[in-house]
Structure formats: C-alpha cells, structure tokens
Image (cartoon, rainbow, N blue to C red; front, side, top):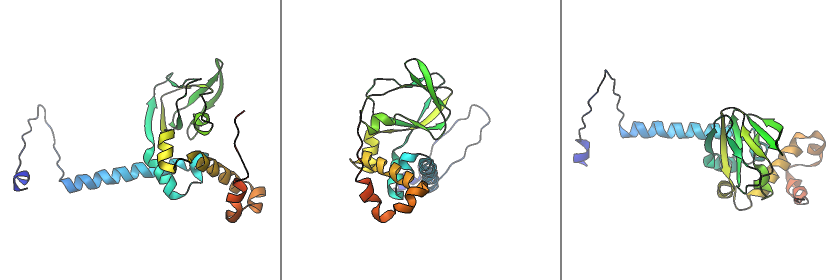
Length: 193
C-alpha cells in the first residue's frame, strides 16, 4: 500500500495545458452522482411512456437501469419489416418515419416508441422505421425487460397500460379502484389475429 501511495507519473505537455487531478474518493463520488443523474433522467422519461408510466417505483428503476442509449443518423433504418428482432425504441430526441408498403404512414417524435408489436405480440416487425433526422433513442430488448420486470414482463407492461387508462378515464376510475383492479385486469386476454 505504501508503494502505491508514493507512485509518481510524468506528463509532458506539447502545448500550454492545465492539468487537474482528483483523488480516488472524489472521483468515485463524482462518478456515482453522474450515474444517479442518468438514472433519474431515464426514470423521469419512463413516466412519459404508457407502458411504463404506472409501474411501481422499484420496477421503473429496474427498467431505467437496463435502458441503452442509441443514436441514428438521418435516413438510417431502425427497424426492418419482417425482422424478428425483439427490442423497443423509446424516442428521446428527433423523429422517425414509419413506412408501410413503401408509404409513410406516421411520423413519431419525442416520448413516442417503435417496436412494441414485436415485444407484446412476440411477432415479426410490421413496419419499416427510419430516422427522419438525427434521432436518439433508449433501447430495451425483451431480455432487458425480462431481467427488469420478470419473465411475465408482457403482463406487467399490459397491466401498466390498463391501469393508466383506467385511472385517466373518469368513467372507469369511478367504477374501478386499487382493490378490484387486478380482478378486472385478469378478465382480459390479448390475442393476435
């Protein structure tokens, strides 16, 4: 340990420079604060996405830890129709063009998502999706969702959607409350036709 404390390094500057040094504890504190800020940003972003909005704090935090930041230059294909990739892209910045049979059918921007059909229905991609401009997304694979929410992640996500719609609709929110929500949800099934 004494030898490590006495280590010296030489740095030769080619131009006028300023050098700042941090001790290990300070560096680790700063690193942890940056990680916490990143997680907080992702956690708040999840509050804008219907599939995650009604998750409890622990589940939402678990999903936030799994989110990967990916960027796509203008014109880059993000999703190809017919592929079996199992990932959802949550749009953080920019916009995407959704194309069906060669025609643009929808443009989506910040706080929208693409790729959900392959996750929820476990099917092939149904659209081609291209970045309309430089676009930054958070990506979650089916493996990420399974790790974060459990192997029944599809049910958890559908339950979150159901819960959000029930609570945001005054007709239903008067009839359904926390005590009978799970019973009502259990009556629904999802089918792919």
